[in-house]
Image 1 (cartoon, helix red, strand yellow):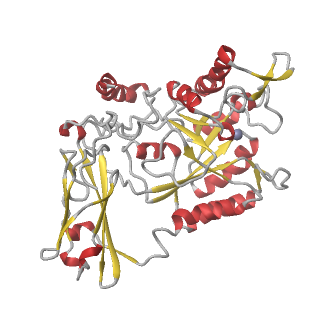
Image 2 (cartoon, rainbow, N blue to C red; image 1 turned 90 degrees about the vertical axis):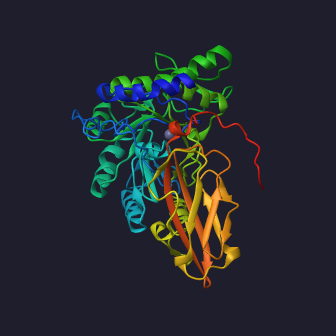
Image 3 (cartoon, helix red, strand yellow; image 1 turned 60 degrees about the horizontal axis):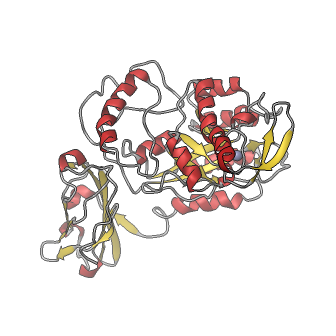
Length: 438
Ligand SMILES: [Zn+2]
């Protein structure tokens, strides 16, 4: 671990010139990278020959990201005018309407790579986001979905199973071609892995094996035979995509969402940074990268989409009457956007300008810690909390709320933590330190 920590900045620096494979393995121990931000180490998509990173060179500052942001990840399959398989199809009109609903709900569509960069603490994202992904590699994704996405200016990701590409043992007439994928790649579409043959990856499950002659046999694999097959599915798929398209693949969508710890481990060792299932849920800063849930959108269950949008669409905007107070008005400490050199900061805000505060109503939330026991001095209006358990991420969001004259007021701010200066290896596994209070 320590060694990896030391070489990481070097590798990231090399990354500018080589523009290849960056070391992003351990998915689960993710978000805290204690290294200078690579300007845009975006995988897949737009590599561009231009020297983008050169100008914004070696100032070692920690980007401060809003850890309270939330993202919905949607998963689509085929776009067809006449629905025959409602479980995996949607009409172009319904699809386009959903893309518009995101816009109308104030949800920003971001790329999957931006979501991961945010989780690494390298890049900020808007408070409410969505990521659009397409599975399996159908030509309708190229011919129908892509033009719609262009219309909205939305980025997206394709999860491809390699034997399903046209010409592969499972690639029929409706399959996407390698040429189409290359065209998408050239235009900034992110292309990622979805196994070789799209089957349940757990040991002992029925699978279909295609013999070179095209003959298919149903079988169950165990032991070394299973391991060899699993390697092809998880690792071989990534290698083939990387070689055929000259891209970096760092994401893996698990077919049917069926996997287990062993499959995760193989994927992690293969260099996948993130793994995706079909169990949709809003993705937060701390969602584990090895099981990011996506909402699979089906023609016969339009409510899945509507409900997902409601999950993040209304929580902060509509329902509750919360008056947002700017952090600068509260003279917060650390200030919004500042970077501190300790993992144990004193966090303070002054509520005196807000109005008459109901003393029992003052609450502070700290990302990574949750609600913390604050002291509040009604005379000065100062609310404070001395962090007693090292903050592990390289940025920290604080939410202070209170009731004033019957109304809830709330302030959010985020500060950075220079982990290196703080002497806290950000990637070190957290020892379950005894919690002093509570
Ligand atoms: Zn699939």
